[in-house]
Amino acid sequence: MHPATIVTAFATVFVAELPDKTMLATIVLSARFRRPLAVWIGAASALTIQMIIAAAAGHLVGLLPDRVVSAAVAVLFAVGAMILWRTADEEPDAAGPTTANGADRRPWWRISATVFVVVFLAEWGDLTQLATASLASQGNAFSVFIGASLAMITVAGIGVLAGRAVLRVLPEHVLRRIAAGIFAVLAIVAAVATIRG
Image (cartoon, rainbow, N blue to C red):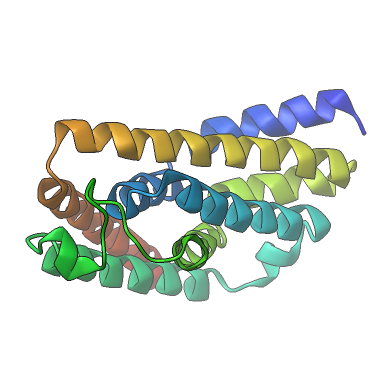
């Protein structure tokens, strides 16, 4: 392991991921399920696997057609926006079984699996995956993987904590409407990227 490479990978990925859609998705999912550990496990697992893919095959993402990745991201965010908008006014019990504090009662592994799929697909072909692949292509792929994974896991933790904090300030239905709007904008941006090629 190369400590300098770990620090470089951590700093690069951490800064790139903080304002990213994956961070937003983690915040929304944390607020939605109100099961922070289950959300963090799902997000951290997805992000770590993405970093394995990026570090192990630095050129893999470059082989995928940009239009395919952009189109998939656009569809995912459009579907997410519609679901969030349609369920914004539902009572917590209508969205799924909940506890007295509004936490989702489904088994933690189901919540983690849901979060895993959403985050894994949202992160595919993302800037941080490309940055990790680029760093890994220069050598020391294992050190790059360690640094990048630590950065992603940290960002997922921040997203989970932010999701809990946001719920103290905004009612859940307002948060869902805001998130739906943001997801719709991200879907449009990805669709435009697909069209422009």
